[in-house]
Length: 134
Image (cartoon, rainbow, N blue to C red; front, side):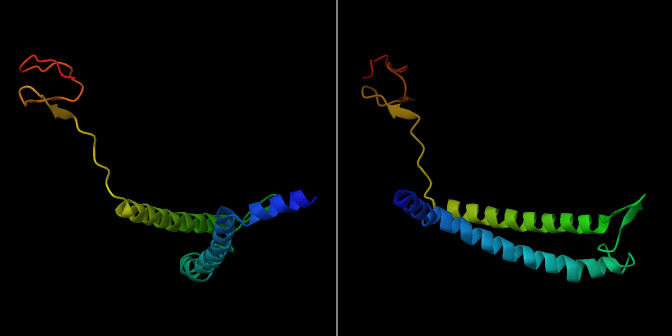
């Protein structure tokens, strides 16, 4: 049993797990902000055009009442969160690429040791002087 708890402790305290936990907490807080944005700003603006806003928009089919407005607000939340995450990931990738030093490309040509002409890197015989290249 001690070995089990030791393995769990090692797993739980790894950097990746802690980073993921922080990401989940920040994501939950960000979702709360987006929910407030859609509920208290976007929905009232839409309410100027649709009486009661989207939250109150329901459709009744038989005895079932479908909350289409709440569903549309959830879609709006998703689109906003996805757009912000896309922008964050794109900017992080851009920063990562800026910090990376560009790798030098492998040379495609070399000089013939006999006539000093530029020849293909894979050549074993010079096309200019027909000398053997080692």
